[in-house]
Amino acid sequence: MKVREAVSADAAGLAETIASAEESGMMLFGPGERRLSPDQVEQMIVNFLGDSASALFVAEDTGGITGYLIARGDDTGRTRHRAYVVIGVHHRARGKGVGTALFRRLEDWARERGLRRLELTVMTENDAAVALYRKMGFEVEGVKRDSLVVDGRYADEYYMAKIIE
Image (tube, rainbow, N blue to C red; front, side):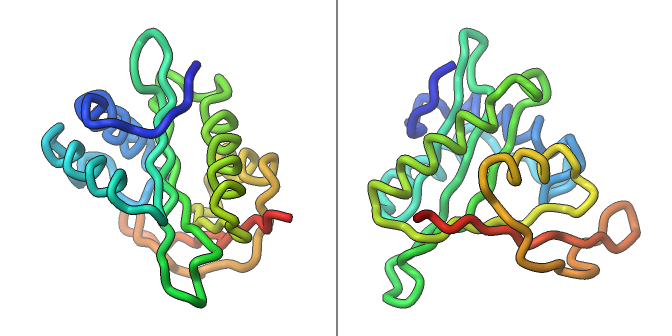
C-alpha cells in the first residue's frame, strides 16, 4: 500500500472511494445523499493542491484507491496551528491498515508544517473509527449531543483531538 497526496488522475477512483465510505452510514453524508462526479472530485483535488494549509491524501494498492484523508487547515493567525481531519476507507479495504497508514502520513505532514493540533468528529457509536483514532493518539475532548440526524433519530458525536508534541 502506498499513501501520497492526491493528483487529478485519482478523481474517478477517489469518487468511488468517497461513495463507498459514505455507504457505511457513519459519515457526515448519508448513503446516497450526494453523488460526486469524477469532474467534481478532480476540482476538489485541484483546490487542495492549491491550498498550502490543507492536504488530501490517498491510499492505494494494486486495486486502486482504498482510502482518503483530508486535512483542512487555514492561515488565520490564531488557528494556523491546527487542522480538521476527515477520513474514509473503501469497504473492500476496511480492517487492513489503510486508516493507520493515512494517519501516519498525516502526522508527518503536520510535523513538516509545524502544526500542533489535529481535530475531528466521529459518531459515538462508530466503535471501529473511535478505536482507530484512540490508537493514533486522539483523545475525546467532549460530546456534541444531538449533533446529527441519522435515520430519523438524533446521534451524538465525539469531538476528538491530538496534540503533536
